[in-house]
Image 1: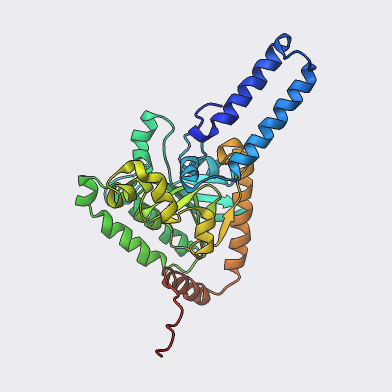
Image 2 (image 1 turned 45 degrees about the horizontal axis):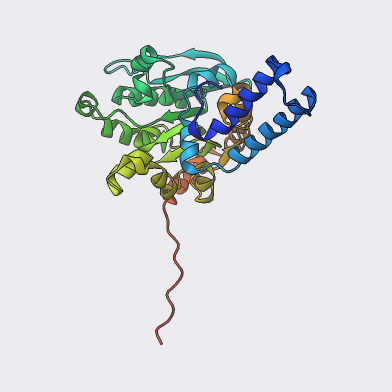
Length: 326
């Protein structure tokens, strides 16, 4: 298992033992047949996987969301969608390669798909700016969304970013304004909008393409106003407290569903999406199609009304009425 995480070491050790035994059966333990020892190790491996992956902590899920082998936006566009035709540029400044988008088909249905894209190696990460978009990335996304609205095409966004890029050039070109405009304009688009968090969903960088009629999230993805490391640095003055921050932030898919911040948790293969990208793509495609059919059945007026009410309701805190004074 390449690129294994710390908590996956017991699985890695069992896999190595199993591989060694299969390659050198003459070294098997005395008193057991080779087949029995293989079977015993396989059962131990299956049990280790179940124990580890069914009891992941929030911080471990964050680590899975950042796994270097995890499928990215373009991977899903190639597998869950068909006939993708990429469009470039914001028509104001440049083409931000951290945001990709264009026409595609989802289950045969024409859509506009837009997402944040990370790189696999240093060269590609520089090209994609590690998935952190500049203002022109959000302006490109909005240009494509308005084009989709003009032609009556549903919009699908795939979110996987640690956050918008906070550099000097980004601030000079008004990153905050670009995100704010997207929030406002996405609330007013009449076509169905679906969003899926497929990895990291960091802060305004994620929300800038996340205003949607339905918000989905993969089982091991996270969605948060701040990264666990950033939260730990602020509250505990120590980024090493990231695991504690991840638990306190309640950023996992199950927490977000319980809080009403997402509409569906899309399951992943055991061990994460990178273990079986094709199966994960099928799960995403099926979930998107289900919600698209439901949202498209509404009138444009009802869609806008429900979308507005959905986001206005986020963050409400319900407290019991105080007991009457004696």
